Length: 344
Image (cartoon, rainbow, N blue to C red):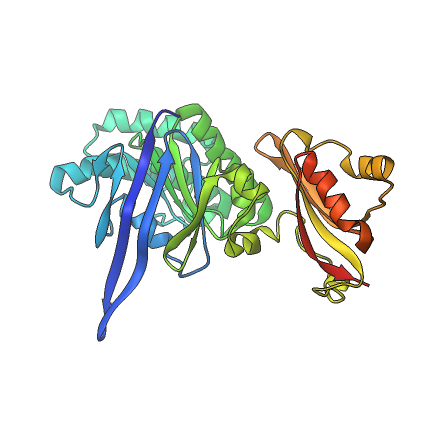
């Protein structure tokens, strides 16, 4: 990664409403590294889609600016805006395929609009069909395809003009988990093979865990946290980020424990231990027992990978009078701990 594929600089967007304005985005400053897969996560209404529409000029900033490969999208018009849009492919949540066109015809559409010669269109479409694994379905119509197959058509269509950036608008939210994974694998492969930068929006933290090298969390139109995905998973700073993470990182207490949890002693100390970095795979709980004689009761958790790096959370309880000592030992060895409360 040598630079920024997309930059948002002090970006703001307001829409008129009766009696005034409503602010959709405020002071967004974010950089999407070249060659990265960068994800933006937020709840419905947080401003994700508005932010994405800024990149291809479907919405114009009220304040600040957005650039694609150094070109200001908000001030571009005419041929300059068309040139930017050729470098930006869009993958939609609900596919947006033309029912009257075959797989081949849907993929060819942006090339036809761009005035590409017919012979070149045929060769390019054939290449894309093979790239997304739809060789046997080239002459099928959308009604004959599964959701995952339709999304592969959408990805091929987005790649037709050879863009430098792919925008993904909740591209997997209408798919089942297994199909979601195959589509994410395809996007990751395209990113690796073609070097295309991907900016995706989602409300699913698992999507970012599985595919994104960088991420940002948006809340009420503002970026509240941003950085490398692994770092944010390992050490989330904002409460919104922690809430998103709780469902995918083993960071949620079992209901029967949560019901008994209280803030103050007495009771065993309940600790969340985040395993990341060089000691992520070390047997630290075993060492806690052998070195300090502190037995930890495991309440829940997961150990997995983000990218190729091990990561996980364990929820443990230790005797109240040994809790601070246990936490100090674990943090000495590069792990992160957080006291969640006490259980009797």
